[in-house]
Length: 345
Image (cartoon, rainbow, N blue to C red; front, top):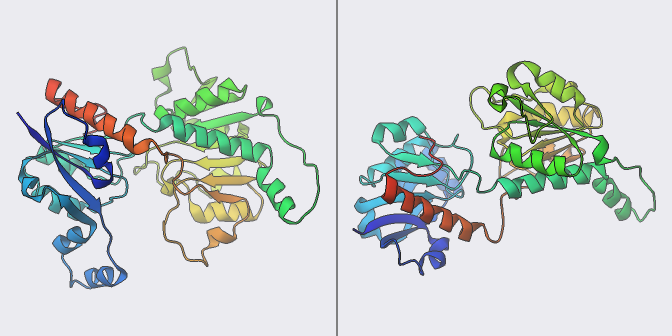
């Protein structure tokens, strides 16, 4: 039996050689609303169907929509719940949605459950490369690379004292796939590693690769106080939104770094800018900014020792091809067992 799957158009070259699964393909391309269209929508002159048509464009296979069995949702396509529901109405045969992201806060999982559609995230697909970005930020902070570059631009020569990483502690808030990879890399270079988990008991008597696991809900203050580098690796939900605010930043060491490779809303951006400006925190490295299109007058551009890595942690020249293999592997598991890998709903 032939199944139809919907995938990003830019991945087409990776699917052309697949003959094992007997699949038919629908290719789509993410679009965007123009400022004029967005304004018209906000005053009620454009409906959800028109908005979806602007943001989600079928390139090939439009006649196969009703037969769609699985959808690979690219990170470039973020739809509101109403827009996603409109899309699902056009895909009555959909059984599985594969989200090419680790987080699922952008998806209304209850809506998928009500429709009987299974949802998967990308599991540990990007964990290693994100952990490597964390390690790069730790090295940059400990070895004062930003300060070295600033001195160089001034055409000055100045030797700076740098920290020994094997004498430092990294606190990792979140002990999932990414947190574990970060812990393994940091421990390999001799750092002391402390993790914060909602359920430390699941580690039993062996916290490896962490030296110690604390309770996220009760012992976060102790982790913040003893860490030279604090890494945020949590999913965004009602409990974690604004988890790191002014009080938490004040408990960190004054020369420590904060590295956020989770959703930006977990850290209070206003409080962070204030803490950095007043020197209460040594530096911050933020992978996902709260807004992709920032005004040139945004305070974040004026905040000292704040570096954005612009969602580059998971970006890689091979990511699209690897995601294609991940998606095809998931399709095979669906057809063989009726269950996809890394299911979240």
